[in-house]
Amino acid sequence: MNKTTGELTTSNRCSGVHVVSRPNTVSYTVTFEGDMDVDPTAAQASYQQLAEWELAQETLEWRAYNADQTYYRSGEGWLSTTEESAPQDGFAPFSGTINGSGIYSIVPPVIP
Image 1 (cartoon, one colour):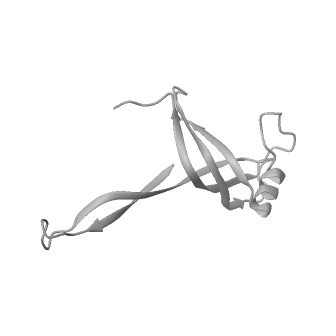
Image 2: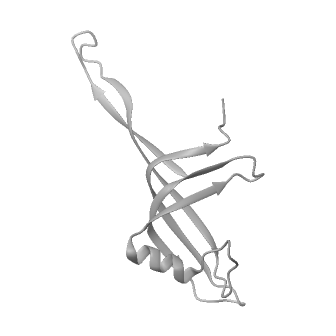
């Protein structure tokens, strides 16, 4: 997940020529990759389904787990890019990017 926080800058009589900044809008993207499966299970989406969602510009619900699956991030977004490669040795890799829309959650919350 790549997150960017924009900033709101201002100055006033108290700060003089010094700029005061605060966090403002947050945008994020989620990248993913995999191998195309000609017979996906019920818990998987086919590459054809991903292509149809991208074409229809549908908002999707996504979830990404950390390596040891102790927490995950989830949210909504739309597919902004998908790429596929020609099959080699029976595998056809693909990748894509989801542009986040709205607030994302961390479950369970990670408290610093």
